Amino acid sequence: MSDEAGIYTTEHTVMDKDLEIRELKHQLEVKNDKIKKIKIAYGGMANIPKRATNCEKILINSILSYKIINKAQKSLEKDFRPITDARASEKYRMEVAKNLLEKCFLEIKQKKLIRINI
Image (cartoon, rainbow, N blue to C red):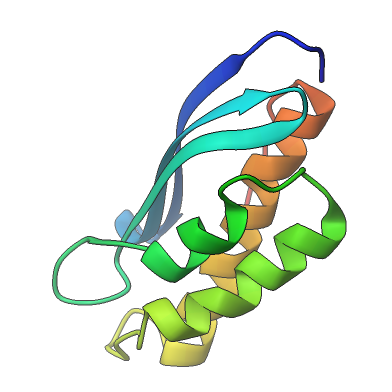
């Protein structure tokens, strides 16, 4: 990252049999490698989309690192109690949510999109 501010807005979706299981939308501003503003929301984790406020609190004013990403991933367990239905279990939904969070920060660190086909 450079000293210039970077504003990132992305959307990550996991599809299974043409049905959306999980969706992550985030908007953040990074300056001097530090997260200055952040909003993270997930769809498919509950009956309605919801912000990941505990995760946001961990990431705000933090420098992007694997340690902080891991801490943010664990905080998703405080933000959500995923539903289990015919499409996915609670455990699967949480694991995918954590992986999507890691993917978005890897894309920012590497400054390129990462394509995953399932």
